[in-house]
Image (tube, rainbow, N blue to C red):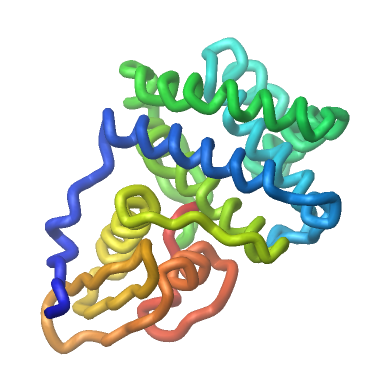
Length: 248
């Protein structure tokens, strides 16, 4: 019998679970990148400005930016300067990609592998910083986020979605398990439900899937779990409640 979870009962991701998810996600990204050949590293991705090599440089940049207070402060300044009058995130990611463009693949991957656990622990230990509020470009316009939301949720989602991007670009298999990917997807579902506030039944297929519901008489949706997240990340289009995006 199909188990249906009330979406309001999905627990929030918090420490120490957020630390474990962050560390596991970076490790899976490293394993994926190590499996690619020359053509894979040169493949274009769903992010128009980046091939896989550039995307890997961005991922390493995010890992290193959020591994120490000194590096964080330095990269925030550099990102703001590079952005000028444009979105800050565009400036930051451009700085990250450029900074790592000269690394060999082995150097990039060794640094990513070494700093993954450091980043996860650093993000989880920022007790005072977690309360700092920042204005970001959310799916429905400017939003105010606590740094804790960025540390616990968004940075892990970002790497996860880029792992999706790379598997789509290269045809490489994506490692998916209920305890890791399924947990990330369930958290996405819960935020999506809070944002649209409408009744629904949602069946997501695949190893990261599950079934969730809220209220009665709403939309009945069924699709692959990864495809669902790609739609919510604005990498594909969907009808009805699937037009409600969430931050990645």
